[in-house]
Picture 1: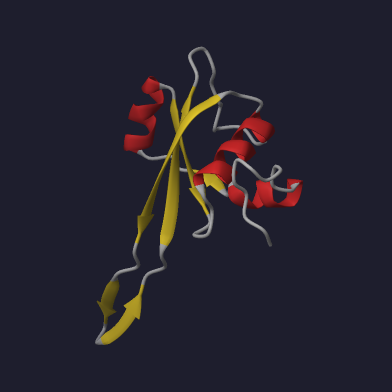
Picture 2: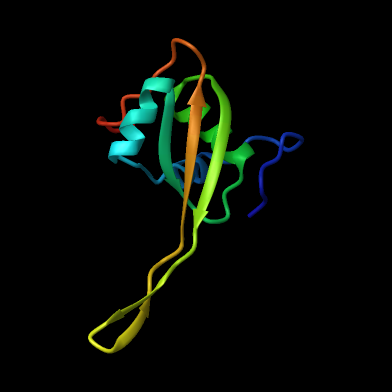
Length: 107
């Protein structure tokens, strides 16, 4: 699968639905929503250009910035057995003034 960059065409419709996996609904995500920002879980191989194109197309809003953060999986012990948590990636999407996404409803 080819990766999207500003010079390439948009990602496919299937890739767009794969990129925006779910909204993150936490206390911190709710607080930043006052600043026109929405947080989504995204795949580890997603880049900012793909995420911006997917959010703009799926939700029909104007995106001004995309910040991503990657959480590495930690080693945890449970009853003398070592296990590893999964790695995850989140995208914090900043919307233009007057734009909003209602994350409590489906796409």
